[in-house]
Image (cartoon, each protein chain N blue to C red):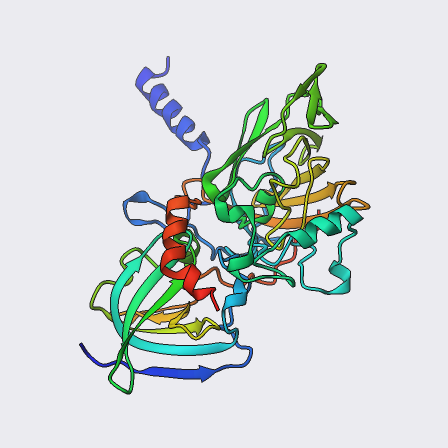
Length: 296
Length: 137
């Protein structure tokens, strides 16, 4: 009969070996407060590991570096730089809205004294603008019912339901759920389904109207009639490709692609710094710098 | 106070010209491509949202002291470039290269900083994106 002590020791050893090994272990930081590592070697055929099934969890940062998801000049695939290929298919109402928006970025940027970006009042940006505003370290958690995205900017969170529920019906003033009209939301109502083991397709409706939110920092509009389609494709263990298309017949004459952003997995222990919009700090900044620097 | 010097140079498109930064004032207020190098004494460093602010006393060739206020992006944005809450301390003597504002006031944004201990930090913003295209699924 085997020695119970030996069995116990072998069991403990096997258990220890079977614990998930964190292959992201990276730069150690004093005291264990891990700082983001933007210098990891690229994913190649040599170090590529297979993607896990139906799993988007992780701390993700733009593969092109910390500033690659900023999109200050407009949505990633259509920067607002005046080039013909980046002109958007505005409806007359959409163009009117765009002209009424006084943005601090893009080809039609104004000085701070004239701007009317709701961001500068610390208003929630809403979906889809959170996808186009300083996408930096984005944390994703999930369980069997939902995927949760923690946006870095303004420490905001969003839920995508993956439990098979229906996408609400878009109606005037909100959405309809089980015969009831429900309110519009900054993050809308998001439902996801797995297209395959590595691709989650997400639909969002019921977002805020055009007098509350913008599409991007250059003042492109988005309305409450928008239907936002996102895909999250886990290309391999370390790479997630986040794509987005918007269909908003109130503002644009046809659907168009806004983003295809490649994200790189970071160590799950990475400390994500706060990145918030504080009206008090905003006011202080304007008093000390912004108002004078932007004045004539 | 030790005297500092103001060196103004105009650069054409160069590596230090920052990309659009999603600043709370936009890029339109800055004199893009122009660089001013300031040698001065730190008065205050505010490590805060939406932008960090550095107050610097700079003595000109005419012995007049001018207070410059120069900014970096938000703390989490400039952290990867090495900027910390204690990067600048009062009475530190530092050299800061900035892109000035267009209206002529002594203000700008930090392109590069040589700290009191001799370390050099780059653009007080996210570095320009690397040329990484999204992988094809």
